[in-house]
Length: 366
Picture (spheres, rainbow, N blue to C red):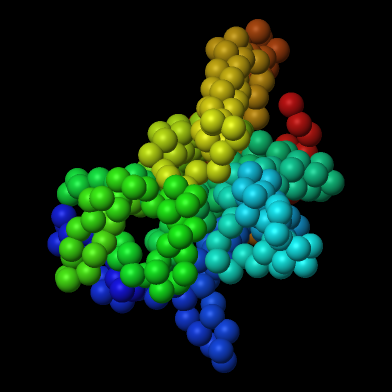
């Protein structure tokens, strides 16, 4: 009844709880994984910041700034596009308020959290006089890791699945689990569990199951591929902000394709809101990337800080950074720059240089 199976792959998990109970209080694995994702994301951002001239404390403070807004953003986004679950005839004000506050059973939309995170990032970097494109580049790897872990939280919650399938990668969910949770009528009424699923149930280990596309797994694997690409490309990037734009573009592509198969999508009229936002992400990423590639081709100056591994304990541990500024090349070509730029792999910031970390990370926006 509480199992999750992948019969085509020979994987049988007969007892998959949704959480753990401590002193009578159930703590969902979804929340635990999200919290762990936040911590790992912070660690990655601090590590990348150290390699690109931004103080670790700047990212620690940022995480404190954005923690609550991102949770609120994810919740508000979900409520806006699923408002009938919280407001309507027969739902009192007190009940409506209770449902909105109760997030233990899910109801967080990643897009809402990302939108809130972007708003906080803009405000925070302006206040701290940090260069937003570089700041964002150092964050995206942690964001992706958090999203991957969050999708496994969906696995424990038996949510974020797609339509019926009998393919070898199908995921089988016992109907008795939803009956015992008292959610079967809601799942069928909302269209998450479709008539096609109910007409094509499969007996797995003597249990009647619906077999569905494991959308959570597909999106998790896509995010992992994007993360591996960014990890590989980050020392090859051509300008600050390129990594964050690649993230926005590639995440949008994956989300648009996978969302098309999901049965639990938030809707705006006949459209899946996540696909609409995904298209906006794709367009934004493409426009910014193409614009900056054209600028580079024309020789325009665009800052580019690449991460450099710095031995711990050295005097300039937080000061070494690779900087490729096209304006230097342009000046050299025009004969106004007499001193040759050092090779990229050997460029160092002198120990006696009096510039602050924020000045090195580009305390001004372009």
